[in-house]
Amino acid sequence: MRKAMMLLVGATIAVPGSAAIAKDHDGSYAHVAIMNGDYARAEKALEADRRIFPDRPEVLLNLATVYAQTGRTDAARELYAHVLTVEAVDLTLPGDQVANSHDLARIGLSRLTPTTGTQFTSR
Image: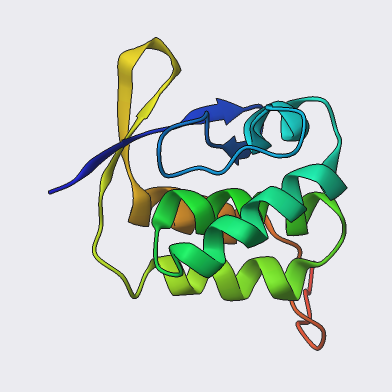
């Protein structure tokens, strides 16, 4: 099983730089942009990475985070679902914790708002 490096930012998932993650024009990485709330910059870098690595869970998870943080829950949901269709990989989190990409995708899905048409009832 492949092991990749990740960083968990609050309730979001972000990837620190590695050879697989493209730098943007000023040399920073998408995870820095996500941590700074610069989702447009992060999205640009992650979309470029996705064109090169369309099935890389760490790219998909981070891009899903950007989509979720910018109100595009349907797009985020699609990416989390896509992660579940590719090989699971172990991802290193802060504090040397390791998480499975499928588990992270399921967590991401559970944190999204329900799709339109979902009805909740209470007593």
